[in-house]
Length: 68
Length: 405
Image (cartoon, rainbow over all chains, first blue to last red; front, side, top):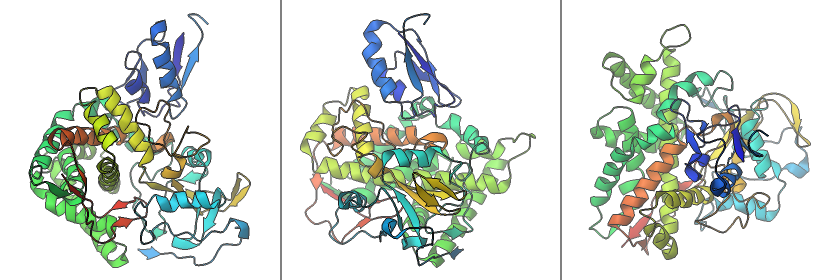
């Protein structure tokens, strides 16, 4: 699985970073989402899904496996 | 400053969308001012309605419409939007500017309020919380508002602006007058005083810059490498003053009021003092259920929205507390679930004007609660709460909240 962010939509709520710091961080300048691990291991899938569902802007999206 | 009252309903509002509602008025016996909004929902009033009170304005009650009110700045502007209308009203930077121009000051402020920047403030916030609480921890009682919730964010503001703690009483007085007075004469004098303070502050930081926010704002350069317009600098200072004090004070009031009456919630937080992730998640639920702000927008042009005719300069209120309990979005919306998994509340707004101080506000509340529970693990509401102290308006809350332990 991969997770993608639309930075045009992200407004820096940082809920993703709070919920799954293994995969998400925020930048120093605007405080917007930084995806540290776009292709995350299966054991993090549930946490990433929760983070995606908690984005108040709907800026995060899950995509299929590598290369899809 | 003139109050532009429009006592009757405008022609474009159909009779079936008219509801008498004064969002400043909290009827006697209403313990919780957010109830005036939830009462509307229970009465089954239209989800978009118009009230002739406070100059006349629309109210949105659906989560989806409130979110659209935040996101769609082409219809719903923050520029000159106060309710009741008040002109001239300072154009707060960047809050009172629509995209794309609001980016100038938004980008200037953003680095100082990122989660990373706020994390670096942790130690200072902890010290302030610890010190304030220790002043009354052994007394067995306090007025939570005047002894803590008003002082803590005001102290944080002074710190961010590079002002000495000795200015606290003066700023508490100015802030209290600004947030609580409805007398136009008092408000006018108060505005003059706030702007005089800000002017003096920025002049001082212009000459002797520090590492504080005021120095950063006054020394920032615009696209032509010149200092920003002095008026914009003052209006940016004004925004930070307005946005970061009363909101935090009253959110804390709601949170402590809830904890004082809910032993299980106190235990829940106490058990998670060493688990910041779970602590923060639970704070998020308290943010959902205790949304104290009602935001204003002004309609930019005549148009139709969800089948309702809106006219240019119509005002709209977006009550976050109603959005946050919309059953279309939240599972068991009335229940406070401190482990709630999906929680897309709009307490800090959404879209381009999302509250820039949201991370600071949450950290102020989290640290306050951690330090409080370490010193005062058990507490409850005092029997005598004095005269009715709940108030409505753009920020709802309490004048006083007496706690005992």
